[in-house]
Image (cartoon, rainbow, N blue to C red; front, side, top):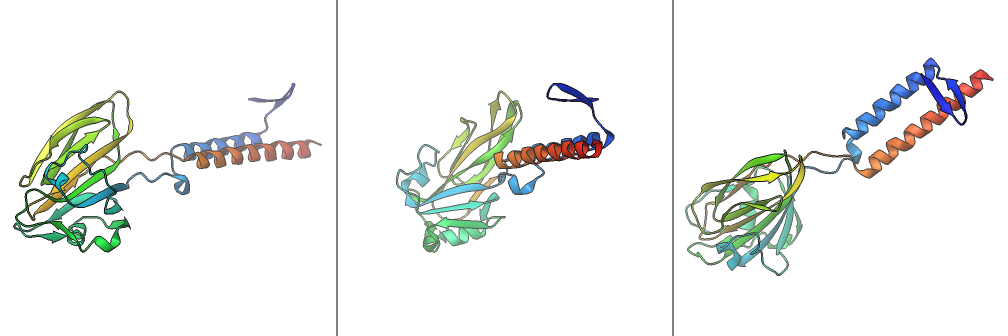
Amino acid sequence: MRLAIGMKTTPMTGALRKTARCLAGIVAVAAIGLSSPGLARADLFSGSLWLNTTAAANATVANAPARAADITFTTNAINFNLGGSGGGATVAQFFASNSSAVNITSGAGLTGSTFTFSNNLTSGGYILFTGSTFMNAGSTSYSVTHDDGAQLVVNGQSVFSAPGPTSAELSTGTATAGAAGNVAFSLSYGEVNGTPAVIEFNPAAPHAVPEPSTLAIAGLGALGMIGYGLRRRKVLGA
């Protein structure tokens, strides 16, 4: 193996070859995303919640209220399952039923407000979840358990739409992608007429990718090590 430097061709020493192999390993690790400080969060879902809105009775994605959400939050899971038999419930009770902690980013003072009203089929709580999921090329199947209405949109395609009041049911459907990769999803959910209040969706985790800063740092490190190796070789050969 020979290394070209300017117009001269110089044999690569064993030490320099070893350095090059180490650099290749470092770059490979960065490329597959094992350098955790530079990885983008892959498993975080965002939620916007509106209180006492008629959108809850027709919970499509497009029907999200135009006004600002009353509460916004993030979570690492969409597995809310609040039991009951038609009674009312607060936002705090609904959030506590999730399988993962709910981090409230705005509207924390409203969590004691009523999320679902007993004997009210026309208004209640509406939530729009957003996030990303990994899709293989071709068709991917999805399923959501919900009580009451819900709609799932993945990669710009409506997977299913069942937006009206209902007892707990499993809705399924498919979306397609021309190539494998991470895609966006939106999941709307409306809760009316009291508990139970259920929304459960477990999408495939998106593939984490290195942020530009990670690759930039790896590249600078590689250049620095190459420069060090060349200088060291020059000193030893003097």
